[in-house]
Length: 617
Image (tube, rainbow, N blue to C red; front, side):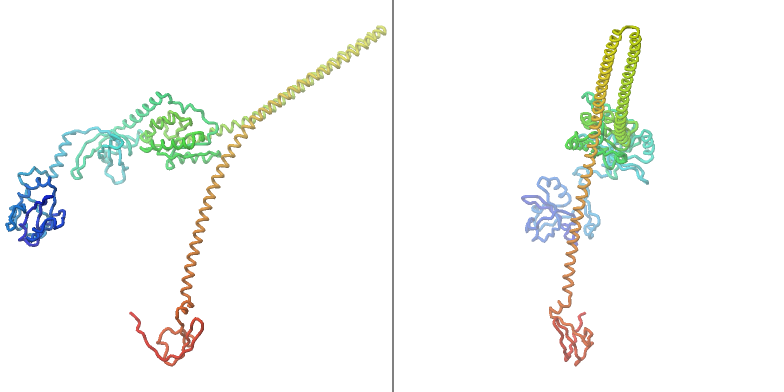
C-alpha cells in the first residue's frame, strides 16, 4: 500500500508489443521486476509510481483479463492520460487507506469465473472417495521398507509398503500399527520363529485412511498373516529345487568327495556376522595350519545376491584349484532372514561349481536351497568342528598306518624266523633219524659180517661207503634247498618291507612338505608386514627429525635476532651509571658521569642536557 491514499485508485494494466503485463501502482503484492525503461517513459512522465508488477506471456493474458476488468483495472493505452481511474467498489476506502495491512485484501469471487474449492472441501471429497471405494477392512500385500523397531514410549510402528513393478519403478503406501495391535501380532510371529523387519513381504489386514493434516493416505494394520512368510519361503524353495532338478544338477556339488586335507578354505561371510566370529575362533583354537580367504558378502537383504555373484567372480580370478573347500557361514535368524538364501543364481553357481561347498547358516530346523545342494552343517561352529574332525581322522589314520606297518613288519620277520628255525630243526631231525637208521643198518651189517665171509665184509664196507656218500649228498642237497628257500623268503620279506616303507615314507614326506610350505608362506607374509611397518616407522621418524631440526633452526635464528650484539650492530648502545643500567632520565642529573657500551668498547661521558620526551598514551 502507498503512504498517499490519493493515488490508490491508479489501477491499470498495459499492453506491450512483445508481451502483455498488468501493473498495480502502490501495491505491496509481490511480482517480477523489470527495467523501468521497458515500460516506456510515458508512464514515468505521468508521475505514476510503479513499485511491483507482473509479466505474463501472450497466451496467459486472456485468462486473467476478465478478472482485471471486473476489479477496476483498465488498459493504460485505451484510457486518456488525463482520465480519472475508478476505484473498485469491493475495496472500502477505510481498508484501502489503512497503512500496511497485515493480511492482504482478497477480492470477492466474480460469478463469471469457474468455481474455486477450499482445501477442506478437497480433502473431504478425497476422504469420502476412499471410504466409498473401501468401505470395509481389506487385505493388502507388500514389502516393508523404512522400518524402525519399536522404541520405549512409541505409540506404534510406522513404515512403508512398496510393490516393485520394475527395477526402477515402485509403488509405495504408508502404513502403521498401533501398539495394542502390534503386541499380539509380534507374539504370534515369535512363537513360529518369524520376524517382521525391513525387506519382509507381508499380507496385512486393516483399513485405508486419509489424513487431511498432512494430505496423506495410509493403511492402519490390524493383523498380519503369519502363514505368508512360511508359505512364500517354502514355495520359493520348492520352485528353485525343481528348476535345479530339471537341469540335472540338484545334487552334483553334494556328491563331490570331501578332500582328505581341507586346509585351503574359501569362506563367504561377513566380518560383522556372529557366525563368522564363531567359525574363525574355533579354527584358531586348533593346531592345524588352515589358510582362510574371506570373500565378504551380505548375509541378508537385497544386496545378498549381487555380493555373492561378485565374490564368485573373485573366487574364479584367484583360481578355484587353489582351494580345497568353499564355506558359507552366518549366524542364526528368522525364517525371513533365511529366505534371502533361496536364490536361483547363487544355488545354480554352487551346484555347477567343481569346488565342494559346505553351508552352515545357523538354523536348526529350517533348510534353504543351499542346504539341499551342498553339504550342510547346522551352525558355523559345527562346520569348523567338522573340518577339525576330518583332519583328526586323517592324522589318526596316518598314525594307525605307521603302527600297522611296524607291527606287520615285525610279525613277518618273526614268522620268517620261525619258519627258518622250523626248517633247520626238521633238517637236523631228518639227518639224525637218517644217521640212526644208517647206524642201525651198519650194526646189522657188522653182525652179518661176523656171520659171513670176508667178501660180505667187503661188500658191506662198499655199501657203507656208498650209503655214507649218499647220506652226505642228501644232507648237502637238503641243506642247499632249505638255504635257497630261506634266501628267497628273506628277499621277499626285504622287498615287501622296503616297498611298504617307501610308500608310507613318501606320503609322510609329502605331508611334511605341504606343512613346511604353508608355514614358510605365513612366515614370509609376516616378514613382509614387519618390513612394511619398519619402513613406515623409519619414514615417520625421519619426518619428525626434519621437523625438529627446522624448529631448532627457527629458534636459533630468533635467539640470534634477540642477541645484544645484533642490537649493537644496529646502532643501539647500553648506558649505565655507576655500573647500573640507566633506563630513565629521572635517574640522572646534569654533570653526572655515565658509561656508554658499544659493540667494540666503552665510552665515558658527562651529561650536559636532559630532555624529557612525553610517553605516548
